[in-house]
Length: 77
Image (cartoon, rainbow, N blue to C red; front, side, top):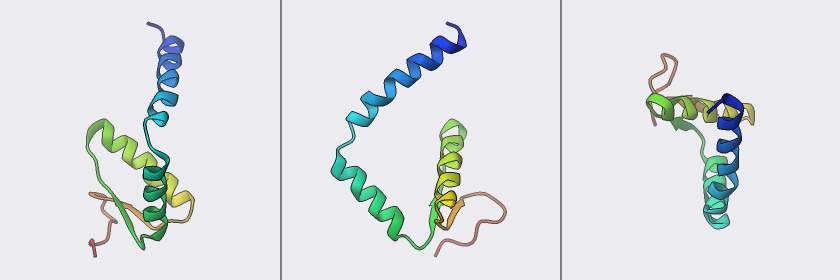
């Protein structure tokens, strides 16, 4: 399988994944993220890379976010 076919296949899976998440659950997650004074993200391997990308998006929207294991991460309080 070439790269463009692989990317198309992955992108085709996104709507099915999003359809499986109830709106109420997504709303609860968003409300919790917006209400949290500080957000910590943790993960290893590929999940860790996705977590770091998610943390960056949270930082970009103005949330105080830290990745567990980074040198500059403050103590969890």
